[in-house]
Structures are given as C-alpha cells and as structure tokens.
Image 1 (cartoon, rainbow, N blue to C red):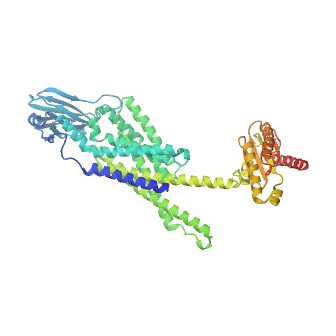
Image 2 (image 1 turned 120 degrees about the vertical axis):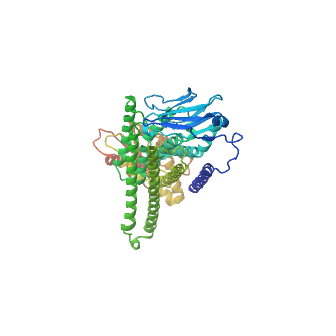
Image 3 (image 1 turned 90 degrees about the vertical axis):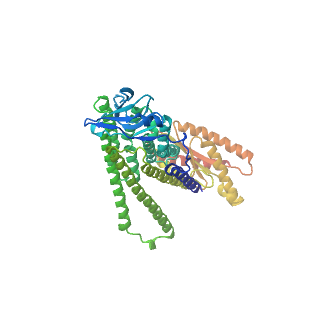
Length: 564
C-alpha cells in the first residue's frame, strides 16, 4: 500500500514539474502586457567600430535613439573592461576587481544612463585576458527598469529549471539522512543529491536573471568556478555505485584530482600566477577525465548486459521443487528489473556526457549557455528520473530490511513465551569469549508433565507462560532470557560481577515464585535453578560453564522434589 502511495505521489510530482516547465519553456499563460505601457527595448546600430589586434575596440553610438527609447544604454560583456564616454566625458566605468581569485568582472550586463545634452556615446572595450576573444556586443536602448525586467523575464524559464535542480538535489540529501538510521540509504544517494544541488546553483548563476540581480560579479565568478572544481567528484562516485560497482580503484582518480585541482587553482591564485578563470583549463581537464570514466562505465554496463543476455544458460527448472521454482522465478524477475534499470541509467549517462561536452565546447567557443533551455530541461529530466530510481531502490531496501528483521526475529523467538529460543541460545552462547565475565543460569519447571496429564495441555501452556513471565521480569533487565526446551529455560548475564548479580536475582526469583503461588494457589509455579559464573581467569569455556550450571540446577530440582 505504501509503495503505491509513493508511486502516485511521484507521478503527481512529475506532472507538477512538467506543468511548471511548460509555463517556463513555452510561455503558456503569459500576460501580453509588460510592466510598462510598451516594450521600450530598441536594438542599436553602431555609427563606427574601431578594433585592433590587441583586444581593444571603440564603438561609437548616436544618442538620439537612446533618448527616445528611455535614456538608458545596455549591453553584455564577458571578462571585458568597459569605459563609456559621452562627448569625451567618462560617464561609466566597469573594470575587473583585481582580486587574486577573480581579476576581471566576469559576465556582466551594463546599464548606462545617458543625459539629454549628450550628442555622441563612445564605448571603449578591452578584454582582460585573451585579446583575441574580444567580441563586439549587441547594444540596446530603453528604459532602465524595463531593460532589467525584460532580461529577468526572458531568462526566468532557465532560472526556474535550475532552481528545480537544487530542490530535487536538496530533497535527495534530506531523504538520505532521514533514512540513514534504517541502514538502507547508500552514499550514492547523498552524492547524487550534492551533485544535483551544485549543478543547479552553477546553472542558475549562469542565467541572465542572476547576472542582472547579482551585482558582485567577481563573487559570482568565484562561486561558479569553484563549484565546477567539485562537481565531478560526487557524480563519479554516484556513477561508480550505479553502473560499475566492480571498480575498486579507477573511480578514486576523479575525487583525488578534484582535490588536487582545488589546491592547485587556489595556490596559483594566491601566488598571483593565474586567477580562477585563467586556470579553468585545468578544471576542464579533470572534467574530461570524469567524462571518460563515465563513458567507460557505460560501456562496461552494456557489455555486461549483452553477455548475460546471450551467454548465460538457463537452469533446468524441471528438476526444481515447486518452492524453488517460485523463488527462482522471483529472483529472475528482480534481476531482470534491475538489469533494465541499469541499462536505462547507462543510456541517461550518455545524455549527461553530451550536455557536459557541449557546455565545455560552447564555453571555449565564446558562445556560452546563459539561457539554454533544452540542455537545462534534459538535465532536470535526468535528475528527476534518477531521484525516482534512487527512492524506489531505497523503498525496496527498507521493505527487504523489515522482512529480514521479521524473519530473523521469527527464527530466534519462541512463539509461546516470546523469549529467545534454542537457536538464539546456541548462537549467543557460542559467541561468549573466554576473556569476558559472564554467568549462565539454567532453569527447569517442576511437575509440568503432571500438570499436562492431570489438568490438560492448556493448563500446561499457562504454566509455561507464567513461569516465562516471572523469569523475564526477574532476569530480563540484566541479561537475555531463553526457552531452550519444553520446560527448560536459560539466562545469560554478561557484565562485571555477574556472579553477584545472578545470586541477587535468584533470591528475587524465589520471592516472586512465592508471591505468585500465594496469589494463584490453583496454578502454582515451581522452578528449579542453578548457575555458574565464568571469569577471564577461568580455565574452561562456555561448554563447561553451562554443564556446571545444569548440574547445579538438577541438584536444586532434586531438593525441591524431596521437599514437595
């Protein structure tokens, strides 16, 4: 029942995400009216462009169109120092921070207020790093607030999808810690959640909306480049757990390289050799190694699948019992389901590889993926599907764990008294070390056969249950109680001075039997007992300790019968 509820919940969650994605991508339900009476954004054409081979350019613009549109000039640059002049007077300046970790101003949108008396605007551009990378941006004019609002609105679909990445990743981390106490969650779920959150944070920071809203571009650049340093590590660990669990060593290369990369890029920045942007080539090399590992893991998974499909002989079911047929059929079904999931995961990894390769290629081509919806949607789909797979596996593990605990308890518990049975006693007593102190108490019910013969087996069962309750009440807080036969019980006490503890409890047992027999004269209980203690100095093991306890119990039993 619970599994069906979870499945329905996940289906509804996916539908909700699809609705959100539909609104974001296809602009469903968008109001035609903007926050202003009309869109004031106008594309500008340069009067003249002067560009040399040293990464220096001067662009001249006419102010008449800018004034008509709303007195604001806007344009986007990447790693470029910008100076804007109005009639040779400097009215705007945006240069790199000059800090060790990020010297340039990164990806920046510029908004320049143009006065009414200006006749000509001159924009001076200088690429901070590679002079050949300088590109002339597109220039726009309009109202200041309208221009900003338009950028946020246009990039909001990409931002929403990136935020969903963060939400799903955070959900996986929370789910991991909430199920960790059940010993079913593996660290692959934790790594998957962390990687998804980092991808979402990095992806959201690349949207125009965040570029406009986050004024501190140096901080945004440092955050983006450092996240890129660490993303491969949790993803590779997740891929190893999911696709290539047989790999014991190769998966460790990427996490180690991530740490080395971090130390290296931080060290180069502190030594003022390279900032994080200049050393991104090192980070991309680590990404390349992670991509290669992922590709190899996919190939290994597919090869394993085809080998199983075409080379593994089917067993002869005609020789199996009906029970073994049922068990075998269930096993095959589970294996087939697991194999299908493994193949699907391998195929989805190919999508992840493609997204990574394309993103790196676009970065070095200077195109960028600031508002790429298709790639972000594929990444979100990847995260959602893998989150579902991980939760599904976890729920199965929880159910299997509950069943295993139930059958273990059933195999080690006496059904009548709910005490541990002989099987549990044999296992526990065999674990007793010769270097520890413990006591074994042997107990036996007197007159059980007589009660069964004269009063019936129901009275005999009540006799056993009453005796078991007394034994458990007296000894259960200090040791472990067992019913090892029809009328035989045993107690193991493992603690310092166990002999003194056993002696005190034996006296309590005698008093409790006396009280019970006084209150229940029609159903009296008689329990013979004997105990022996073992210390680290003892020259015998648990077998001799148990034998001596039994001998003392039989002696006590003879004394009780002689009195009766």
